Length: 138
Image (cartoon, rainbow, N blue to C red):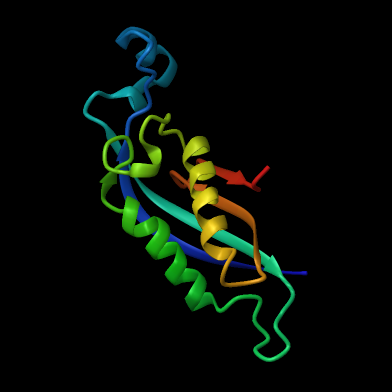
C-alpha cells in the first residue's frame, strides 16, 4: 500500500458558538472564537490517499487530478468565505475544525469513488501553525 498526499491552502472566517447558549456562555466556552464579528484563519488542508500503484503509470492517483478534485469540491467553496454563512455543507453545523474536516471527508470520499481505486486515508487540517486536526473517516 502506498500513501500519497496533496496540500492545498485557503483562507476562511468562522465563529464558534452554540445558538442555544447565551452570549456569556459562548464567550466562556469558546473565548475569542465566539466573536460576533467572526475571525479568520489561513488554513492548510493535506489530503492523503492510499492505494496500489497502477502498473502502467506508477501512480496511486495522478496528483494533478487529486489537486483538481480538492480545488473543485472544497477550495472553491470555502476560500475567502465565511464557513458559518457562505458554505452550503456547513449550514446548521458547528464550524469547528472537527466538524469541518468530517464534512470535507464526506465530499472528497464521494468525489474520488467513481474515478479511482485510491481511497482516502487521512485528512489533516491546519487552522494555525500550532493547531490542527486529523481525520481518518472513522
